[in-house]
Amino acid sequence: MQTLSEIRALLAERGLRPRHRLGQNFLHDKNQITRLVDAADVGSGDLVLEVGPGTGALTEALLERGAEIVACEIDRDLAGILRDRLGDRISLVEGDCLAVGRVELMFTRSEVRDREEARALLARAQVEIPTMDYRDGSRSNLGVTGESTVRSRQHRIRQWAGAEHVTLAVVFTDLIASVALTDAIGNEAMEDVRRIHFDAVRRAVNDHAGYEIKTNGDSFMVGFHTAVNAVGFALDLQAAPGDDRLRVRAAAHIGPVVVAEDDVQGAAVCYAARILDHARKGGVWVSREVKGHLDQEKAAWQRVLTWRHHPQRELRGFPGQHDLWSVNEDL
Image (cartoon, rainbow, N blue to C red):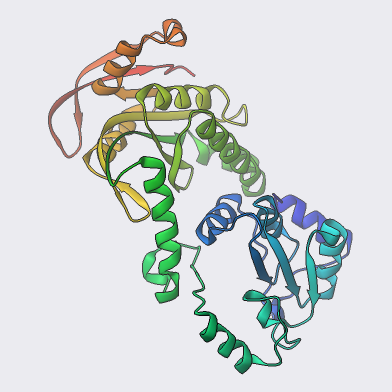
């Protein structure tokens, strides 16, 4: 996917700048692009109308999912960039999408003459169009037609989890001293570093059969079916965060959770988050339950780990004292 630096270079090569009269803002945050594509539930062979594709950042992500794309771009300079970069991989319509009478492409390959005919076509087909406000992803901003988006993501999470009520290992990750690094290298460079880190996280999630539940800033919440996979993911990410300047801290707990709409909730989730509070200086921290699973598993790769016991720790919101364990605090 395109980085902000790449988009700026594409525009600079042609002497272009964003045209505010057209409301041009170029989508470049890979995390948001992934959320948009996931929310749209686009798959191989799906026909997508993208209005205002710009330099093609979202377009490329849709192509990776196997979608057939009709891209409508009113800015002919940007249309030239799309033509050079993507060629015949997309159907490119130059001009105002509604003015050129191509609104029908969102719903059908048939031609329509005007908006009223398009509305009638929609009514006959009983088409439901999912939409979302990707800036916060809140259900309240989706509207009635967005219910399909919520249902689609909910179905995927439940399909992966196996049930609405299930036992999962939950991992929280976060970057250490990312503010200081941003101050040292600047916002633009840090955005590129963060994007590389997000790629590394998602590769590690896939390698350990996990599920990315959500992100918040630099932090990820990931689910796993086993404690062994959860800790394996955290250790691999700590060893290869995507950039040598980054340090990762992580916390894991296993317990019963509830798959609610597009999220995973429950005391076990809160417990894992509270463990992360103790990992301020780094390392992979786990609960007694996770450590117990590891001890029973006795996997070969665990033999090289040197665990440190932290007895009688307080976890905000949970009564009593709790045994925690950590490894690799100096990495």
